[in-house]
Image 1 (cartoon, helix red, strand yellow):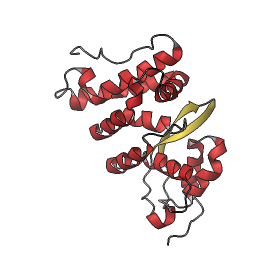
Image 2 (cartoon, rainbow, N blue to C red):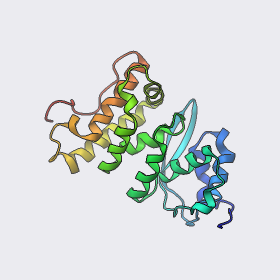
Image 3 (cartoon, rainbow, N blue to C red):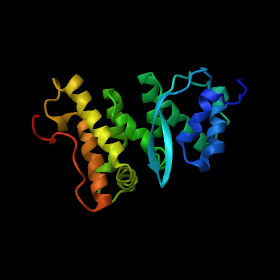
Image 4 (tube, rainbow, N blue to C red):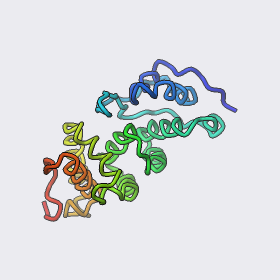
Length: 213
């Protein structure tokens, strides 16, 4: 069995990706994360329930073995899945994203929304299927994501623009109508959640969903 190790300076900064109340849990997770000696690539800040957290754009650490993670708590497993949803390999991001679907923890939300602004179509489809509650007015899922977006308008606007950019570059030939593209449908669902939370129409930074742009 792989014994937990103290997190290196390169990974220690990942504690800041979660609310401070989770710091001990994050350090427990980082103790089983294989060290690369490399710092995470870039980072971005968002607000979660009034607290600023700093998420990595990408990590390169190998996944820990099952023996080293079997004693992690449920919360610690979710932290692990959040971190590896930022992995440099798309298949790893998708696998760990799938484990996050259904979570109602506010600190999970920015990891999911960030992935919605990326280019892997299969990941966008996982999010769309996993967040079916976004289509239900008044649902817990709508409130959860609407709360996050209204607290982070600049982050969400940037996410929308990234979705448009990837659609135009890679998928427009297949989905000439933006709303038919998985990323476009997700942005509409997120915007509806924000509008419901705000009680007013949320600003749009994407093409109209039903018209060829």
